[in-house]
Length: 87
Image (cartoon, rainbow, N blue to C red):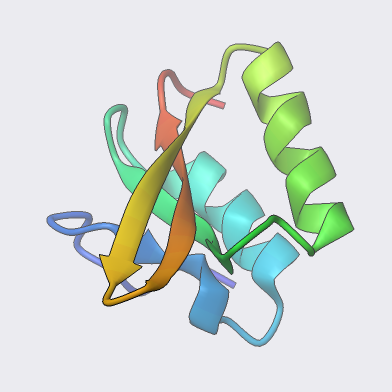
């Protein structure tokens, strides 16, 4: 399953039916510097996606960052992977 994106904007993995497979496609096909949002919420609840993201960071394939999104009194985070090098 290849991602359908032009990588001009962040890839939104959270909307994929199979987020782990979409994350794997992102790492395989995205150019260095591309960003993928792999979770949104107050905390990272999808353990399999979180574990995969940590493994990618440990091997140097991506950097993991968070964005704070505040709407009124509600605060959530976007968990973002930034691809660093070829898989």
